[in-house]
Structures are given as structure tokens and as C-alpha cells.
Length: 215
Image: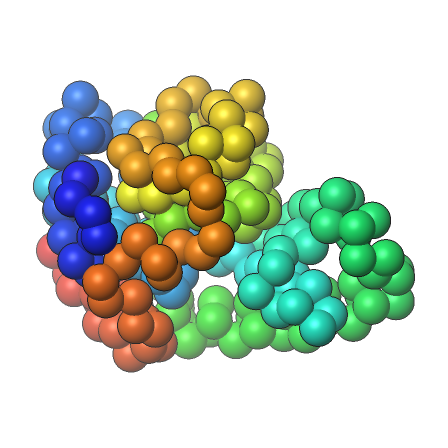
């Protein structure tokens, strides 16, 4: 995969080629972590001829440092906390609860906005590919994995274009395979490895999902 990555669409197309061993499997489903993971996952699902759906996850940003994840939440009441960050910044239980409540409300809003009446996917016995546009601490992906594990999948694959080596290493202990072609060190942010890392809108998410669901 070329650096810098031109955009999420190109990232998805190139990442899809690293997943070609999964092409044509009838037990396959691709789950995107919105919003940034949707354009990447859309290209992967199209290439693999697999259904596309969502795994709704929200980062719990640290008070005063919203980009630094102190944890994450996912659909199904899943919560993962990064104890190292919480200790390092002396974040109180009340502060965690305040951020969590706000993010749970946003999780519900996105669920309604993106999914509407579309049924949730059945993950039991499925090979699930979880996709995002990149990972930093990995908190959101850990929450997504925990949410999928509740539904007894056959196997879980994590596919991301870029992440630091220690994050990839931690994920390999939880899933069957991690595909991450770019593992730079040092690593400060996902956006530094993209030419175009502009925010993905709700409209773009719903448009790509609608297109995938019609196909």
C-alpha cells in the first residue's frame, strides 16, 4: 500500500487485495466502523462479493484531550476502558460516566440515522471482517470485537490500512487474523498517513450503505 494513502476509497481497494483469500465465501460478512471505516469497508465488501453492514462503536475521549481514547463503547452494552490512559491522566469515575452517557446518546442517534428499519445482521457462525480507516490505541476495535464475540461468530478478521505495531500485536491475541499493511513507528495520528482524511458525513455513510444493501 502506497504512502501517503490517497484516500479511504483507495485504501479499501488496496486492502481488499490482501483479503482475496476470503473471496466467494458464503459465510462472510464485512462490518464497518462508522464513519471513517465505511468507505474502506464498502470497497472490500464489493471486491469480496460479501454483504456490508455496521458495527457501531464510539470512542470515549479523555476530558481535555478528546482525541486520546480512554476507552470505547459498542452496541449491546459493550464498554472497554484503557486503564493506562485513565491512570496516567487521573481520570475520575464521574468523568468517565459523563463522557460515556454523551457517547451512548450519539450511538443511538447513529443507529437510527444509518440503519433505520434495516435489520441487524446475524453473526452466529459467520466469518466477520471488521474494518476501519486506521487505528491508534485500538480501543474502538477492541469494543467492536467484544460486541461480535457475544454473537458466536465462526472467526473474526480485523482489516485496517494503518496502525502502530503495538496496537496490531494486542489485537492478534483476540482475533483470528489482523491485516494491516502499514505499521509505522513512531505513530501520532491516523490522519498523518493519508493525503485526504477529510471527515466522512452521515450522508455519505447512508448513501454507501443504501447502495450496498440494494446490491
